[in-house]
Length: 446
Image (cartoon, rainbow, N blue to C red):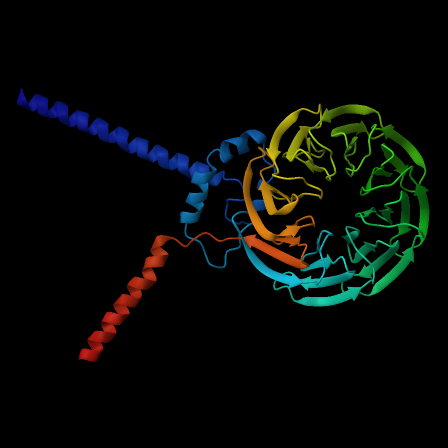
């Protein structure tokens, strides 16, 4: 009888031990699977990392629910001191460069350099690694947002109507032109052969990229505060006369215009099928690109003066969502197919400039001093950085650095803060030094 009871107890213990081991193993497997599926701004850098940015919304929602756990897991893993991190949060300051005047234009980047244009008209080319100046040029007129790099040329518009093209390698002036009575304060647009500037008083010009020769000129029906956008052989612009214009980009004639019943101060963007822009009544429009007829419109809680941005899901050729902000201090993500809301996120204050997308984050700089990062899948704010100085330029990233122009004239560089080293790496040097000290003391005694 006692033998049977002992055998039964042994069987029960073996069964319990079996299930306990299975549960532990299962937990480890689940944790490993979650670590592999972390959003890219919490994952370690790898050569194939960029291919992970366009994921489905369902996958990302599952991942972001576990973001705090995933981040702690990533930070606890051994990491080489020389391993590069993707841009993300938390951030730390890198180098700064003082220009001496406010930076309103978005900095421009190529693989090795960053270019900034101060309000005083000074353009600087800097090394991305250390911020050392490569060259400096002065156009002797006010530059606001009319600053754009395309291939080897920087295109600049000024407050008194001057237009410039500079060689990006040397800063040498390639050509200059002027438009009497006009002021160019918004970012130009560019296609294969032309650069397009939209003036504050309604004049739109197309210039030959190589020579600066005027190709055509168009006059809108009022003042303008938007940046032009070129797509499918058409140039799109907004105007204070309530219209969204579509011009033939080659010849400059009007193809169609759409009346929004309020000033259009939100810059338009276009896909191959639709044109998007917002007006001062807080209405955001989706128009058919071929004829300007309305597909849908959405009412927000404030005027729209920001520049929209597209979001592409995995393997998509055409964007499926459009993002923009309104003066109600919200960031909207709408579905292009019907205008339905994908998500809504607070921006804390109004946004006037353009946002910037890098891998898995939208970087937004609302009015104030703080840079925010948003997950484009869910709208979750994943981090922020307070520059403590008013930000006026749009953010831009390159080589896992974020560049932002400040109102005090500084170009600020931000990088991701590396995670702390594992505990065993922290304790190992101290243990080793203690052993060396003891050995040295024993040698001295002998």
